[in-house]
Image (tube, rainbow, N blue to C red; front, side, top):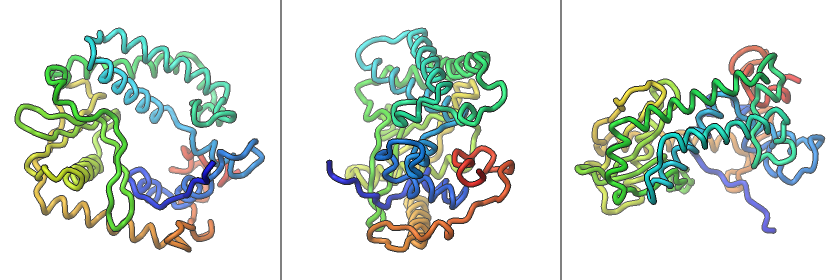
Length: 310
């Protein structure tokens, strides 16, 4: 098997780790590299690789919802899918993954098993099925909100104009791969390229920046598009409203700002490296922890807490 190379790249999620805690960034992207080759938790890299793949209750619900939307949309291309079929899929999936989490099955197969940080660290009472059932109901409610929205009806009426569903893509800025994963792209009656992002959390300022990055990707990879051809929107499914955020058409200057911001972040990312060409980081000491107290945020909820604080 050809040895994988830890290639330098940039994404919004990678930047989030840099902004959150440099030690978290190091452990996730460098310390855990090749941890999949280890055979036991006694191997430091294997341990970090397993911890890297932990999630928490909020992340888990968001992942299941996105998976449910992908399942629904792809199946809807061929037949009418009733809401209860997706409800059943959510229920079955989350029950199975909850059992995996309780067993901490991630230790044996990190890529194909789910384990919640709350179970891994033995949070009191969190093994109750009451929590599981509550989470299932929440995700089902989010899907219900979308299923009966005006947007869902409009999308299903224009299946021929669907362009992509949960597709991972890259483009280049300063010879560095920029990763984007757009939840859904389609064409409406008036807009040739409409990018949609499902949001299961609260509204954040960073949401607009992420959408701007998606618009930049579309322009860089589609020669036939101009800024006036693109619209981007967030759909906040948790709010239970048919309303969704639709931002104005992006003009050239705003997209230039996004590109400039990413360029600055890439420059900073490279300062953390000993060897830029081969993506070799400086020593771990050059990636300080944001806090020396395990109970303080963000350490309290960090998946690597046991490594940093024992």
